[in-house]
Image 1 (cartoon, rainbow, N blue to C red):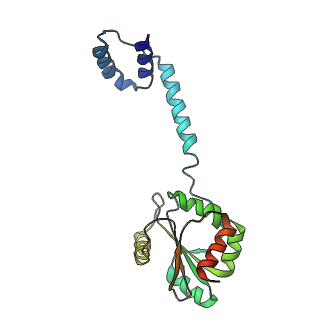
Image 2 (cartoon, rainbow, N blue to C red):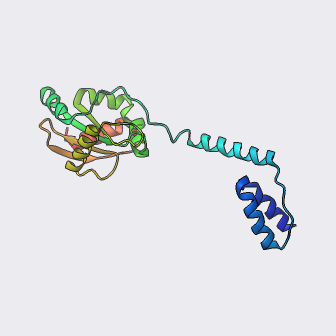
Length: 193
């Protein structure tokens, strides 16, 4: 009885192409010549179920993060010019927007929040340097972003670099829990304002 239950479970999870090979090994293992006929309707139902389950579980994982209404620049030199003109601090966001879970969390919990948006509009020039895996970038963009990551010693994502209006390093941080208001307070403590 126990070998019958093992046999049923074993063959239920196998693909049709592996069925004959495993059946042969089963027959050798249990000294039998009996060939088990698998009910293909159960097999197909099981595959459909696993496909559905995989799609359901991955539906949140493929999310590229929340969108914000912030004015992100992609060129640090231009951001420095704007910061000098407007006397603002520069926040550089080194991110893996389409794969880094902490980057997505930072975006959803901080960059989309009204507290942060208000603070950023009044006090910051924002630069986003993205290192995506599935979003196309030009070779020039990849090289530019990599050079800046090396220049600032970025070792992981997200990395947030704070620069004064002359482009000099103030401080480095990353994801912090607590939402937009807490992140604003965190930035103020790092900047000294």
